[in-house]
Length: 319
Image (tube, rainbow, N blue to C red; front, side):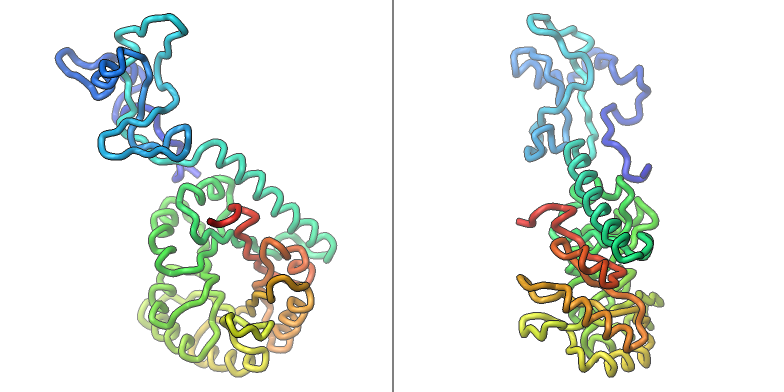
C-alpha cells in the first residue's frame, strides 16, 4: 500500500513548518502572481492534479483549483500576507476519495456474490480467484482497487497492458496479471514477458509462438486453452472436439496448461455451457476453469469456476 501513497499536499523537500512560510524577500511565486491577478483573493492552487471536479486537468501553466492547503479566510476577512501564498508545486494525479468509496462498495458486492455462491456449492472461498478486468480503464481507476487489496487483474490487449502495468507492478509487489483477450502470435513474446497467466491459447500456431517466447525469455506463464463453447463464428477458441489434440500439442511444446477458459453465448442461460466446460476439463485431466463474468459469476462459481473475470461489476460500464 505504501507504494501507492497519498498525493502530497506539501512543498517537496521542506519540513512541515517550512510549508507555511512566506516566500523569501524579492521572490515572487506563481501563487503570488495569480493572487494579484485575481484581486488578491486567497484561493490556493495546485499544479498537476485533476482537481476536485475530477475532469479539469493541468495544461501548460494553467493552475487548477484545489482544496485549500493553508489558511482560508472567513467571509469578509482579508487574507493574511504570510498565510496565503503556499502552492503545491508537485502533486501526483490521484484517485479521489469518491472513487475509492465507489470501488470499495463494488468490490464488497462482488466478494459477497462469490462467497454466497461458494457457500451454496459447498466450496471454500479461497478456491475462487477474482480477476479484476481493467481493460480500457486508466491507472487512476485501477489504483483504488489496488489500495483495497485486490492483486489479480486482467487485460484484453498486450499493448494497452504494456502502457499501464509495468510501473504499477513495481510499485505494488504481488500483483498477478492475466491476459484474458485474444492473443496474436506476433505478440506472443511481449505477452510472455508481461503476463503471469494467459487465458486464450486456442491454436497450434500460437502454441509454437508461445514456446519460442518462453525459450527466449525464460518465463513460463500458466495458460488456459480457450474453448469456443457455443460454436460462435465471431469468437476465438478451439472447438470442444479439438481440446484433447491441442492439449497434447501444448504439453509437447513445453507450455504449462492448467485448465480451460470459455465465454458462453450472450443473452442465453450460461449454466449449461459452464457445465460442458467443466466436463471437458475433467475428461482431459485439467483442474482449473476460467469462466464467469459480471452477469453470471454466481452460476460459474457453483459449477466449478476457479477464476472469474469481472470487469463491469468492479469498474462500471465501459464507454
